[in-house]
Each structure stands twice: as C-alpha cells, then as structure tokens.
Amino acid sequence: MAVKLFICLILLLNSLAPLRGGGDKIEFRYPFIKRASSFSAASSSFSSSNTEEVSFDYIIVGGGTAGCPLAATLSRNFSVLLLERGGVPFSNANVSFLGNFHIALADSSPSSASQPFVSTDGVINARARVLGGGTCINAGFYTRANSGFIRRVGWDSRLVNESYPWVETQIVHQPKLAQWQGAFKDSLLDVGVSPYNGFTYDHIYGTKVGGTLFDRFGRRHTAAELLASANPEMITVLVYATVQKVLFDQSGKRPRAMGVIFKDENGNQHQAFLTNNRRSEVILSCGAIGTPQMLMLSGIGPRAELQKLNISTVLHNEFVGKGMADNPMNSVFVPTNRPVEQSLIQTVGITKMGVYIESSSGFGQSQDSIHCHHGIMSAEIGQLATIPPKQRTPEAIQAFIKRKRDLPHEAFKGGFILEKIATPMSTGHLNLVNTNIDDNPSVTFNYFHHPRDLQRCVDGIRTAAKVIQSKHFTNYTKCDKPTVEKLLNMSVKANINLIPKHINDTKSLEQFCKDTVITIWHYHGGCHVGKVVNPDLKVLGTNRLRIVDGSTFSESPGTNPQGTVLMMGR
Image (tube, rainbow, N blue to C red; front, side, top):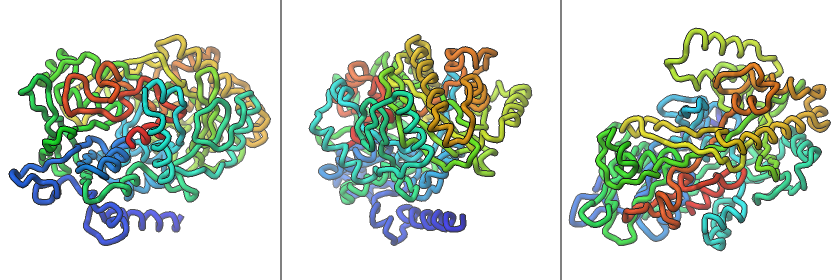
C-alpha cells in the first residue's frame, strides 16, 4: 500500500507540470496543454497580424476518445485548437490505476473525471469530463469493429486498417489473463460460445481475449497520450475550457461556422475563431450526450424546443437529439468462497444471437468500497443514486439500507457475468432542460421497448446462468452449482437501480431483464448520418461544421466502441 501511495504521489507531481510550468518530462511531452485562463492573442502563435483575434484552421470541441487522435492528426498540417471542459488525466490516480476504476465512477464532485446522469428510464449513467474522455473512466476493453460495420458506415477500409494500428501501438496492450477470466473463458467454451479465437483485436464469433488500455502494471493509457504524436508547434490544448456555443455567420444562404465562445476555469468568457482558409472547420467531438446538446445550444435543432428556451434558431432540424440508443446490460452475480483478484473485461463471448457475454471480478472487496457508489461493478449499492431527489423518501432510503444490510457476505468476494444486447432496436431521445452547458440534458433510451431486445436479453441471461453453473466456474469459485432462481435472487438484490422491483423477478426472465437493466456506457446516436450530418459527417445545411464522435452512429461497433471511435478520430 505504501508503494502504491508513493507511485500515486509521483504521478500527481509529474502530471501537474504542464499546468504549472514545471520542467520535467511530462511538460516536455505535452508543452501545449494549458489552462483555459491562459488563452489570449498574445499567448497564441496563431494570432492574426491584423487583429487581436486568435484564429485556427480547426477548432475541436471535446478532447475525448475521438477528439484527441483527431487533434493530433490534424496538427501535422494545420493549426489546431482543442477545447476540453475537464482537466488532465495524468494527475488523477482514480483514472490511472485499474484498482481505482470503480472510485472514478463513484466520484460525483465537480472536478471528477466522471459526470453522472440519470436517464428518464431510471438507469444511472456517466459521461466523461476529462482530457481523454471515456478512455479515462471505462473498463479498458479494446476491440475493432467487424467489417460489416465499416461497410455500412461507408468508410475507406484502407484508411481504417491504417488507423487502428496507429492507436494500438501507442496505448493498447495484451492483458495478463486473470484467473477469473480464465475460468470464464473455459466456461464460455463449455456452453457452446465457440470457437476459441485466442488473443485478437478482431470482432469475430466465438470466445476471445481482447486488448486493454491497462498495461501489465495496471496503469491506464488514455486517448490523451495520443497527443504526444501531435506537432507541438501547431496545436494548443486548453483544459477547463467549457464551450458555450458555436458562433455562426448568417449573412449567406447557409449558416457558416466562425468560431466558438468558451468559459475558463474562473468563469471568464473567451472567443476563438477560424481562419479564412476554406478548409477551416469547427468540429464537435463532445460525445453522444454533449454533441446534440451543443448543437441545440448553438441554435441547431427542433425549432419548437429551441424557442421554449429562448434560443435563437440558426437552423431548424427536427432530428437533432433523436434516435438515442444505449445497449442495455444486465448482470448476474457470481458468488465465490475464495478471494478473487480484481479484473475488468478481458474475455468476451460473441454469440450469434445478438448478445455479448463479458465478466468482471473483485470490485466489492476492500473495506472502503462498501461505503460508496461504485458503478456497475459493485455488489452492494442498490440503486439509490438513480432515484430523483424528490422521490428519495424515508421509506425508499430505509428499503435501500435494508437491501444493502441483507446482502450475503460473499457478495463482496465475487464478480459478475455481464450480458449486453449488441444492436438494440429500442431508441429514445435527448432534450434540453435549460441553457446551461454544465447541466445534463434529459435523456430517454426506452430500454426493451422493442420485443426483440427483450427476447435477446432473456437468451443472454440463460447463457450467463449456464456459464456460472459450468464446472469450470464452480471448480474455481469453490461453490456448489447454484440454481438459476438463486442466482437471479442475489442479482436482483445486488443490482444498481431502483426501478421498482416485482415479485416475479426471479420467476420471469423478462421481468428480471426489465427490472435490473443497467448500462455499460455504450450509448450512441442523436446526430445520425442522413438526418443531421452527411456521409462525410458535415452538419447538413451548414458550412464549416462537422461532427466526429459516436453521436453519428446508429449502432455501437464491436463489443466495445472505444477502439472504433479512437480510429475514427485518426
């Protein structure tokens, strides 16, 4: 423990250098990362000689999974301003270490790398608020999309196959397979999720071990590290830079993006502008929640919705914020009579029934862990955090406390089998609540509204139960073969949502799916191709405005989308 604390301290001191003018190696690697308050014409190498306006060939809003590789790539030939509302990940031990994965999700403070939100469905969720985006707070699993996805979105396969390795050689690793994950692999094969495809980045049917952002020391590598490939003379990265809206020139036939307004960490406002280069663009890479929200706050969206909040309409588009989807996930708790090491997703089962089976272990064991909310990996939480404040009645709180107290002790020594729907047919929508960019919009995903999604969940839960009952798992956990009803009963009690429970949760798999649905943060949509953007991802009806992130997806690629979003940015 003392060694780990020492390492955390060293990382903290080193990583603060870019923001405090220190002289160590981190500063030399990222000299262009600065606080937003440092922004001025005098401090920029891209100031116009005729005015005090700072201008750039490209302004990228959102330094996340797509934004970082995008900025690094463009800076090789163009001047780039990358604006990120959060801070740097290097100084955050909750981000950097696998063992702290759950704590990063639990941190709901304003400076956290994770910003929680609750969909109207009653499922707690999270969005990233840090340079590096979702690669800083996710479970680290890395895979490519299948060739069908690449073909459907119309991307150049040659560029795709050149861009994936660019990412992989810098931040992706082959995992050291945890014992739990090994038992899980053998159990998947035992129940027919075959063949075994070994270690591979490819998305193919069967059981495989995928890549990970965690190295052999359990240290996370994020999209922010891809900025080391940028041309330091041509890029400026501002952290704690919260963009308020995109600015448009509306004097022509089509609105033309000119720049952005953003506020710094002190609340002071700044403007940044594009150069007069015809290729110059504002590119939104704010993610599936942030990008539709940013478009609407900038005046592009359903006119009636904008008018309700007194937002001047720049361009009416009824499809902004529509078609939101989140891959529903349900988890089955696995009890064990032996201590297990912490492991995040390493092994996956890719079935032919439209379901992915994954697993995690050991995130409920520490003495500290039972006192806070740890996201999907925690056995103890119930779903108190998902109840809107007005509904947190004394009765609801007491029910939560009782469920937590009544959990069996072994719940803190086990793990979960996770079942995720590959391509949900149920979709929802995103709407503004107010004009404050810091506040979450209202999001509805309509989990399981389509009967096909519900049937696939039932099939997935049956498969998950068979995996747990496999001799490979029972030999490892040293538990007797559990009945399906016992597994579901423990899982209902352990699941992190306070969607009202039903008496027949453990009798009806359909009801179990509905009542225990959670997320694995693979939400997407809201700015679909053909409705909000064209096939080149330029915003329809505008000039010099493009979107590069998962809001343009109509499906989530691979078992985990981050590899494809990273590649997309490149």
